[in-house]
Amino acid sequence: MTIPRDFRLVDGTVIDHLPVGTAARALELLRLPREGPVTIGMNVPSSRHDKKDIIRVEGMVLEKRELDRLALLGEHVTVSIVQAGKVVDKIRLEVPKRLRGILTCTNPTCVTNNEPVQTVFERLGRYPFRFRCTYCERVLTL
Amino acid sequence: MQDEALSEAARAFRGRSVVSANDFTRADILAVLEAAGAFEGRAGGPGSTPQEPRLPGRVLGLLFFEPSTRTRLSFESAMLRLGGSVLGFADARVSSFSKGETLNDTIRVVAGYCDAIVLRHPNEGSARLAAEVSTIPVINGGDGSNQHPTQTLLDLYTIKKAMGRLDDLRVGFMGDLRYGRTVHSLAAALLHFDVKLSFIGPPSLKLPPDLRLEIEEAGRLGIEVESLDEVEDLDVLYITRIQKERFPDPVEYERVRASYRVDREALLPLGPELKIMHPLPRVNEVAPDVDTLPGAIYFQQTRNGVTVRMALLDLILGGGA
Ligand SMILES: [Zn+2]
Image (cartoon, rainbow over all chains, first blue to last red; front, side):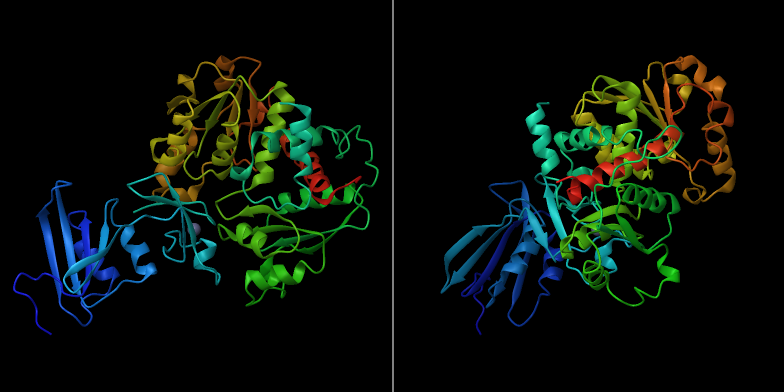
């Protein structure tokens, strides 16, 4: 595989408008790098917002579940799919009103940490994201 | 509220699980309290008349994964007085029923033996889970430190009975505001009404920030102080126990405990009309000399527990229908 000199993607995914400081968390969530090259920009000047982090992943398309996790990192995160050097799809990530099985309750005595049941969290308001565990009713701030 | 809305709310309790006071609407609360009024004087005690059976042949399952004698006896009394029967266990540690089995399985099995379940469980959220998997209504009898909705209903009923209303009230909460489950649920439920809520407690046991914000945003926040001396006008004072395990330092615990003990003298400035409540059991936060004050209604409060639970069981299981 040849990597263009300016690290522009040929086929892959661009995760853009990550809040500054969240690139490392995004890499962790996506278990990157996997196979293809990954380039990371941190503290990059942005036209829309002050500054941002950005990640370009060659040869990878994200799954819905991964997008849901990424959406939790900030309110303006976008994901672009690149094919043959062109952006063919760009989506602004939305945090769902209900998150099933994605977050873990921080309350050790919550039933979700003691019985075989999937967690369900309800989003309270907009960014910064706060979620209420629908079981133990504790509020979690991300 | 209109009678029609109330009877619709009452009908909606049929077959419904009661998991959290946060699920209640204003109409739900008023419907239960109104239904409870019909069982007034039929829940035992001096001058009580027996209730004619409304739930004969119906069986209530009491699953107590941790002991709570008061809650269990109160539900048992309510069901028996309605002419129904009860079965279950009082403490999972001495019952072989649930050994190693998931809560999901236990609930599904017991749902085949009875018409409704009262669940007491040490894990927060257990009642929500039980209600999801159960084919019959589940009533939360306390899920860890989270919810105890029938306690909230009986507290509201006690206030309504003593004051004649739930609107236009000034309610003060004193003691453990941070971990006190009864405080959180009652305060949140009172937000459905036109109330001013004040809080008296040590800095280390302040209200959880989320609840505080909710009360503030509703425009219902009164004063927040450390001492009862700083409070002037209250209709109801709700006192809770300060638990030793919340304090890493035993000396600090003793100091805090001593300063949140009320006696007759401390209550004098608040006037003779003040109603004093406590979810019981008390340790020593309310001195025995308070018991004879006309406003001391904490024993009535526990007695009301049977009345309110009769009403709730009757609504859920369709007594008289
Ligand atoms: Zn939880």
